[in-house]
Length: 433
Ligand SMILES: Cc1cc2nc3c(=O)[nH]c(=O)nc-3n(C[C@H](O)[C@H](O)[C@H](O)COP(=O)(O)OP(=O)(O)OC[C@H]3O[C@@H](n4cnc5c(N)ncnc54)[C@H](O)[C@@H]3O)c2cc1C
Image 1 (spheres, protein in one colour):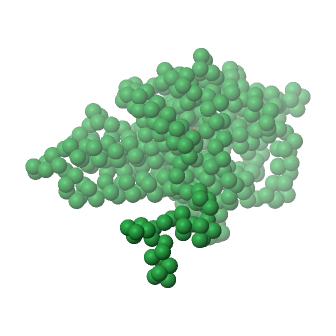
Image 2 (spheres, helix red, strand yellow; image 1 turned 120 degrees about the vertical axis):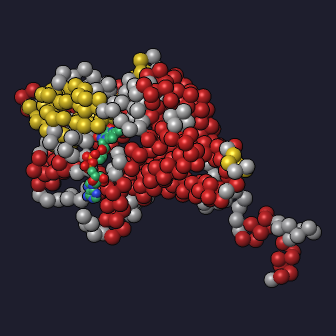
Image 3 (cartoon, helix red, strand yellow; image 1 turned 60 degrees about the vertical axis):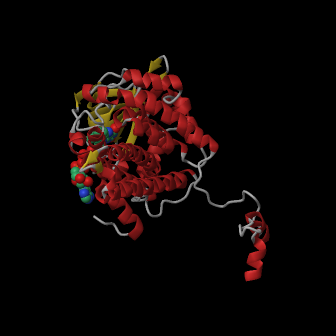
């Protein structure tokens, strides 16, 4: 054995990998597992990073202070092909599933409020993709984005004033007017990203209250529909460049064709639900699991931004005659920040890859990624403030904004408690309350 090993080593003792691979029957480049990004993924990442660094980051403070929707920045994004139907389709097309999370991480590294202003539309687009027919996708998705000369946004309206986590509590109703082949929607939606400023609103409404969440359906509200109005705009703790508002739906009449998935499919689904079948909606759970890694990647981007800022600061700032990073208390914190961010990214990429390659989310891996990344973003940004000391608490430095922004990642798209509920149910098979 020792002689064999010696033979595999050259005169200087180096291992001849090619020879070992040949003996083991491994062809060059034949790897079954790799964490390396492809050249295409690296190129898109660098391009997204450039936009985040040169356009998004310099605008972050201004739009956070103004608390207004940054239309000029979204227009810039549309001009370079970061925002729009084609680009999002291209990001999604990557068979590994990683490109969209990668782009999200870079954009939200630039700024989370502006990032949400740019990618909030994809929530509505995901709603259309999740339940719409191919014809509905072709008709409505381009109208969600507009084009570079006339940029539009879209809103996904599910949450209500009295029902966020508890989706079975939605009170918004949709009634079918058979004589006119129209749906009539009434209710109030809360916290809608882009609510009221959107060209297209995707609304979740109850068509049969007795069936709880199984009696829900998704509807597209076309641009300019009467009765669909913005309510109060929410003044927020963070992501203040992103527009969040109530949406009032008063006798909103829409064509029958605006029911996502179509009437026939809805009737079939309702009939099954009434018979007590399909009580457990695997399809709905899969939809959430698929979208969560993208949301997780946004949180990873915020955490990374705060970590990088704090690392640079710690290498410059002096106290007691030395750089503050020379203290273990600071250096170990930075080590933990880096560790947590990388762990969150690995969970995120795993879940994105599982979704795209059709793997079952047996342990709710999508929820795992969102839970971990959201909590890492909150913890990391808080630590960054601590490392910057008084400056960290000042609006002159960006980490306090990052901390305010990060908090929403443990609340929207399923709170941390709801993610834990989903994971614990998935791993146990027990209906944990
Ligand atoms: C900035 C922002 C943007 C948003 N954008 C959108 C959007 O575009 N579209 C949309 O539809 N919604 C949106 N939301 C709404 C968001 O998804 C909800 O706020 C979120 O789902 C939580 O619902 P809730 O606020 O009603 O909290 P609640 O459901 O009332 O929860 C309150 C607390 O109780 C906990 N809790 C509830 N149930 C349980 C349980 N069973 N076990 C343990 N803990 C529990 C929760 O985790 C939370 O801590 C947005 C919200 C914000 C703040």
